[in-house]
Image 1 (cartoon, rainbow, N blue to C red):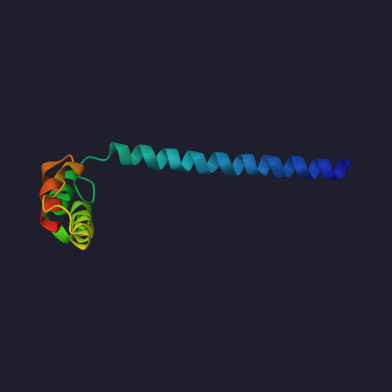
Image 2: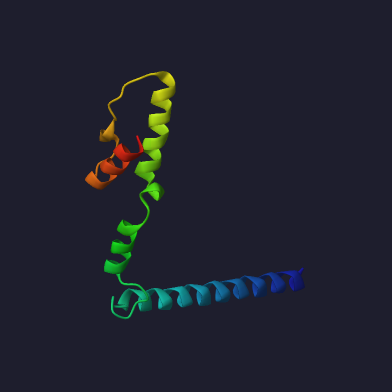
Length: 100
């Protein structure tokens, strides 16, 4: 009984130490990435934003949603006016309208 208890305590402390080391590693890497400036990062935020705007419109969720809703409306013979109010941003509304 005593040997089992000792083994269980040893395993418990091994798990605690491993979890502590893992947490410390994640904290250190997280603070390093937060201190990173846009000049030192692999891709700056401005470049990422401009690249996402330059992607194909057919990849946008609003465009795909417009295709789907337009297809359903055509099958049902419903309205010809696109419900662009489903999307809050003007870019998304334009993409939805293009897909519809």
